[in-house]
Image 1: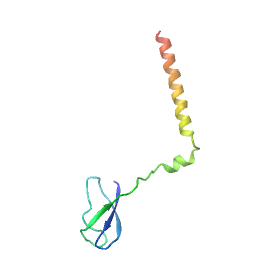
Image 2: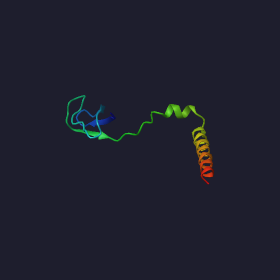
Image 3: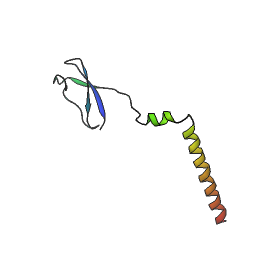
Image 4: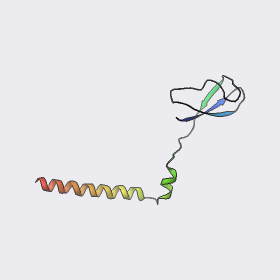
Length: 82
């Protein structure tokens, strides 16, 4: 489940709540006030560490190599059908 950040107008503090996208937090977990607003947050990429470890362009080169291999295999199949 995603984590959402809310701002409480009662205690003027920020707090985090984990719930479904369809749910809404209705009260502050810190002071219990019901005047809370969900704050916009940024997306966190959990796979960032894996991507940083590879050199720039490695994933692109790997994709191109696979595409070339697939193309050669398809060409062979077409030649055999003729």
